Length: 260
Image (cartoon, rainbow, N blue to C red):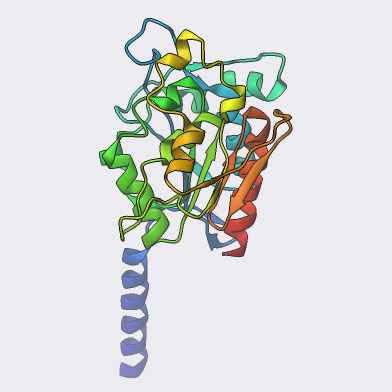
């Protein structure tokens, strides 16, 4: 009898210890820890200091979000300032965009994005930098977001993904040894060939994505055709050219996660 009681006590202690060690905020997919995917977005309402409106690209968010959601992942949103973000480039003829416009939970998440201080890198298996003109401002220079992303990438073997102007968010990322993340890697993003460099909006940009990636040792690759779903995967860095590649980038992220 004493042996039975002792066994039950040990078993109960094991269950308690195990339960205390499980992060209940991390969901599971098919019984396996899936982690979460962090969407990085911008609070910028204007192009730089101008009065020209800008925003996050709605299609680039929802087409990736939908892929991750269908794969069973949970997502969070972070922005430099937290709170509501501007969204634009909306096409209500796109049934998926229309679906998410009327999804109260999804729209509420965009209205209440997290501040970087609330984010723990170890909770995420991947980050996804959304695009749109707003992505050029606030995100690339944010030290807290840089720290979160590189901790996830280096300490927890996570994936970094970007789309279109969202690639601006990775130009300043450095590894522990001080090397730029993009150095020696194949990288894609919105290329100079499709920018209107004489336009007022472009003159507010702090840098050219293509030129800065190249300057920092990256092998910038792009499709001259454009809007053909072009993307590049270099190990755990996955980058897409324009809105047409958002779903493809997300599918590649899911594929790599399943093989890690």
